[in-house]
Length: 69
Image (cartoon, rainbow, N blue to C red; front, side, top):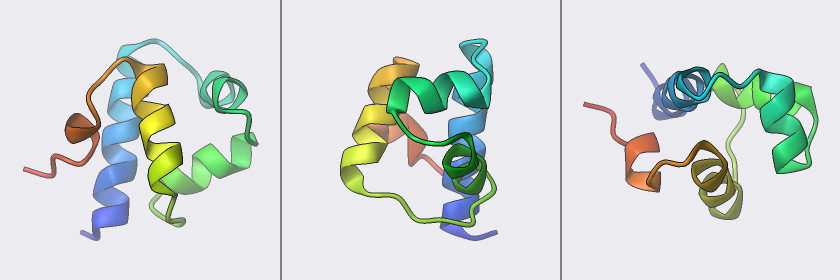
Protein backbone atom coordinates (compact mmCIF):
# COMPACT_ATOMS: atom_id res chain seq x y z
CA UNK A 1 0.00 0.00 0.00
CA UNK A 2 1.31 3.48 -0.83
CA UNK A 3 2.32 5.92 1.88
CA UNK A 4 -0.32 8.38 0.68
CA UNK A 5 -2.98 5.71 1.15
CA UNK A 6 -1.61 4.85 4.61
CA UNK A 7 -1.63 8.55 5.54
CA UNK A 8 -5.21 8.85 4.33
CA UNK A 9 -6.23 5.81 6.37
CA UNK A 10 -4.71 7.35 9.50
CA UNK A 11 -6.43 10.68 8.91
CA UNK A 12 -9.75 8.87 8.43
CA UNK A 13 -9.20 6.79 11.59
CA UNK A 14 -8.52 9.83 13.78
CA UNK A 15 -11.29 11.88 12.13
CA UNK A 16 -13.82 9.14 12.88
CA UNK A 17 -12.49 8.72 16.42
CA UNK A 18 -13.29 12.40 16.94
CA UNK A 19 -16.77 11.86 15.42
CA UNK A 20 -16.14 14.31 12.59
CA UNK A 21 -17.53 13.97 9.11
CA UNK A 22 -15.37 14.78 6.11
CA UNK A 23 -17.36 18.00 5.67
CA UNK A 24 -16.62 19.00 9.29
CA UNK A 25 -12.90 18.52 8.73
CA UNK A 26 -13.10 20.41 5.44
CA UNK A 27 -14.80 23.37 7.12
CA UNK A 28 -12.25 23.43 9.94
CA UNK A 29 -9.42 23.19 7.40
CA UNK A 30 -11.03 25.79 5.11
CA UNK A 31 -10.96 23.51 2.09
CA UNK A 32 -13.43 21.52 0.03
CA UNK A 33 -15.04 18.23 1.00
CA UNK A 34 -13.56 16.76 -2.18
CA UNK A 35 -10.04 17.68 -1.00
CA UNK A 36 -10.53 15.66 2.19
CA UNK A 37 -11.98 12.78 0.19
CA UNK A 38 -8.94 12.74 -2.12
CA UNK A 39 -6.54 12.85 0.83
CA UNK A 40 -8.27 10.01 2.67
CA UNK A 41 -8.27 7.85 -0.46
CA UNK A 42 -4.57 8.49 -1.04
CA UNK A 43 -5.15 10.24 -4.35
CA UNK A 44 -3.56 13.55 -3.43
CA UNK A 45 -0.39 14.67 -1.70
CA UNK A 46 -0.76 17.48 0.83
CA UNK A 47 1.58 20.12 2.11
CA UNK A 48 3.33 19.84 5.43
CA UNK A 49 1.41 22.93 6.56
CA UNK A 50 -1.94 21.22 5.86
CA UNK A 51 -0.76 18.08 7.62
CA UNK A 52 0.07 20.09 10.75
CA UNK A 53 -3.33 21.78 10.55
CA UNK A 54 -5.10 18.42 10.26
CA UNK A 55 -3.19 17.08 13.27
CA UNK A 56 -4.17 20.17 15.29
CA UNK A 57 -7.84 19.89 14.29
CA UNK A 58 -7.91 16.18 15.14
CA UNK A 59 -6.04 16.75 18.40
CA UNK A 60 -3.24 14.30 17.61
CA UNK A 61 0.50 14.53 17.14
CA UNK A 62 1.57 14.64 13.53
CA UNK A 63 3.67 11.56 14.21
CA UNK A 64 0.41 9.67 14.79
CA UNK A 65 -0.69 10.53 11.27
CA UNK A 66 2.55 9.35 9.69
CA UNK A 67 2.93 6.19 11.78
CA UNK A 68 2.47 3.43 9.21
CA UNK A 69 3.25 0.40 11.39
